[in-house]
Length: 443
Image: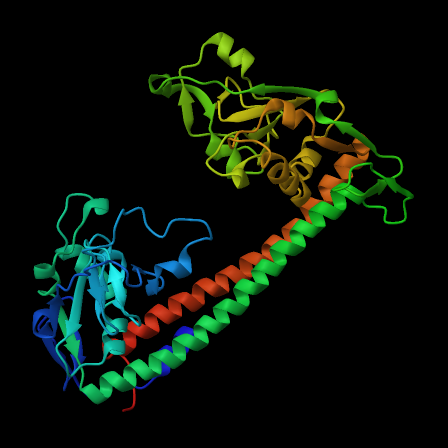
């Protein structure tokens, strides 16, 4: 529907060849000029480095670095900001290393920014908002990429002489202003619609977490007699359920540690990322290791095993669990992980998948890990984890229920995400169409 609306919007009465292949046709009364005739480079430097530190990204344009730094984190690793480039309100800031992906924009702030960035200022007679939209379109990003120097994408640089060689579309100033005002209004409406849908997704994800936690702690029979679990952060549980420390229902094992030459070929190897990113272990993992027969015996991964993330730079990434739903033959696993292997008949692997990833366990790990110096989960701490044990048949029923209800929620999330993707696509197309004259904006 959105694209149909765009197609139905009025066009200019007449068009002409721009003379620039990648720009194509433009409205007849528009002109094109090299960027060097519209902008000048600014070289002002800070004497003390005490001004507001700014950054630029493809998503937000120019922002205050202080608005994006978590409490307690450093604003910058630099010993001093003396000599950083000064930025005035209305200056165009370009991260020359990432201009090709849209990391440039006009600054709404006075401040300073990295000496590695380029600062430009309109010579006059142009709308900053119009150029803000124009220079961040996919059309222009593709041109920056073509003009950037470097062999690989991560090393590309858009130097000033190359940026100044880019052709700019020039409507009349009154048109530039009208186009910018039109896009400000329309993109704000689209952004608001996206924000509403993102909030709906957040609520759906929260509902899913509540579903999981309530079901793995209370079961499916809401009328069942309840008792105190004896664990403060779990609360009441069905009277017929058991609570056991993890050490009593299975054994634990740290993964294998080896040098770099151990990896790259051989047998399946489960990595930290395989566990951190998946609640079910992938059947086919990408990692390979030159494991021996003894390695594959000691560090095997079998159906029902639960792998936990053991070490990380932050406590928040410790204790994530991934369950093996099907034995991975001849596999071993990383030393950054702990394997928990339940005794036969204690835990159904589907129940493990949801129990060991319930929100209350995240709180448990974060709280307990705050008592240690390094972000490393010990086997002893993991063995102390209380585990709820419904009867085995009930564990299966709980798994089936959560799978069914979760699928409904996931489908609702998917629909919302598809709508967000379409809105973002429409926004990009709308901007491109307006600033390149594909649609007529009244002025």
